[in-house]
Length: 215
Image 1 (cartoon, one colour):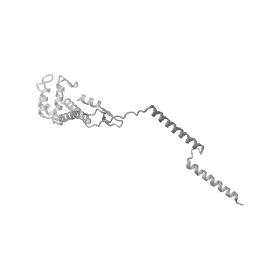
Image 2 (cartoon, one colour; image 1 turned 45 degrees about the horizontal axis):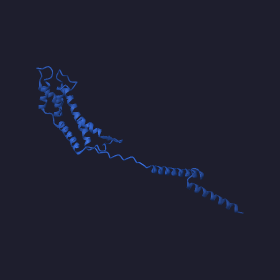
Image 3 (cartoon, rainbow, N blue to C red; image 1 turned 90 degrees about the vertical axis):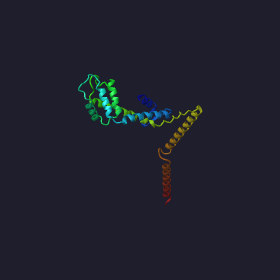
Image 4 (spheres, one colour; image 1 turned 30 degrees about the vertical axis):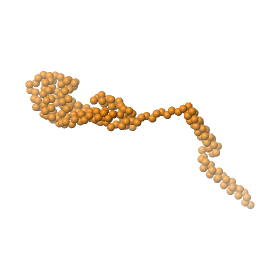
């Protein structure tokens, strides 16, 4: 399961906006998609089957073989306690917890003495949480989109590059010429403002001429 998730993660890319997609050409094939869906269904089955009393009894008997024999051990008491501690526990989770305990895979649980009910409950819940996280991780990969291919970098011939440079130079010269003409004709004044100013000057001159002609 971990190997599948590692492979799927390596085939994806995250965009700047946080959207995740498969790299171009790395999307799931129909067969791979069915395989992922089968893994999800298997986890759903593990998580969905409720805890059976017989499973608890079987677990209690197996746990009772650990370490020193206890003549006073009462499997019924352990069954009842686990039923209270794990009311919604999936059946497969307690089976997996038992396997790990008996195999010595849990460093926090003694190999000499029987584990306590809170230890068993914590381990079982951790197993269920791990299954749910894997299920959610697999589900997000089923319908991920595939990233479109990258557009090729544009390439130009030497002649095209020379033509673009010549055009940029012409544009730069034109901009410089317009700026120079604007400065000669009134600084930053717009063409409309210059026309209005010239018209005003002509009217003033005409009025002055008319006043000079009066006796």
